Length: 501
Image 1 (cartoon, rainbow, N blue to C red):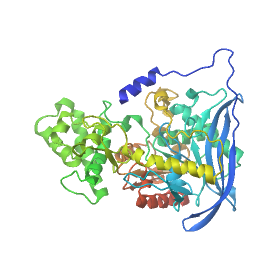
Image 2 (cartoon, rainbow, N blue to C red):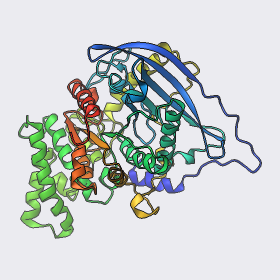
Image 3 (cartoon, helix red, strand yellow):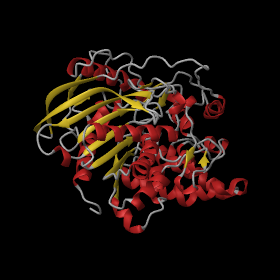
């Protein structure tokens, strides 16, 4: 399905409603399972309690609306009120938190093969020495429509499946958890990956302005925060500029360039300079770009991406990420991964122009889910789990409009919650932000992430509260073991630091 057809479907989608006089179905009971554990993290033993299950959410009329799935890790001993607590989630929209949970943050980690096909079982999991539970208490969240979370009672999908609906429901889960577990005094953090960036910008603002919850920190992992820069090939020039350095890192990794660049950060700066200083102005000229000026740009596009000048010319200097992933290694019959462009897989349609599947997802997904379900049932003792929804089919039902706080409630059809994040930082100047970004990410390219940060409308003195860390891996950089080590170190340092450090 093309992006255009997805967007058209958004306007046509409808939601079920209860007929007049029809009562909602009986509300299932929220259930939790509590177990005690000891894990080896960072070379020391950590004793903790795990609470896994669901929390019942209600509306202002005290009517049940949803069962919210979560897994909470709370350290034993010490002063709990003083211990930081972190709420973490993946993105999608429609993705469960299994990736962060079993990939880097939780005490157990799925064993997968980096940048290659994993075995088909028996699937393995190991003690995760890079878990963050030695630094914070951790609550992994599955938003409604993912994991075991679902609408119940009077709740309907449309109450949760949208930018602002999702921000509201996740924020209210956090507030209810703080209240039920007496954690209001604790330092508070949120961590979101991918679409979790859009969620986190909005949640930080919503928590502060609606619930008087001031966060200590926001962690953005491979963030998608602005719709307009997140997809190329939609008639807007800016995303093409943002994706170009990642095209170059990918081509370099797969040996598709005439010259091998071993210093990746330096190469990325070189390509970014071309993208911003030469490629962007060339695109803005449109049909006025001609002759030697156009030829010069075409030569450099080919030099940096491994695609021919002829291909770039026929594409009118605009190649989206799906076409790039197909074209780069078409001659070998393989397609490049979008989530992590170091991965590659067999091309199903060798004359097609768009990706049929993402080799990274099919490579690691089965191992992640098998490890999670084995852990949930056998270690945490969770019963009646039902079906765990890894990817909810929510994108067609998603309401992408967002009431930007700087527009007095006016809803824009394309969300940008970096505005929410900036306004939160201004109203809570002690809040810090950590951005963690991979160089091989064709889902949320690193230049787009830098663009978000550079365009935050905040005073210069607040920029010292923002840190960006880069990894020589993709969207889920923690599948790459050297990046996994760095991820934990960077995150732990961030939590221990004070504003401005």
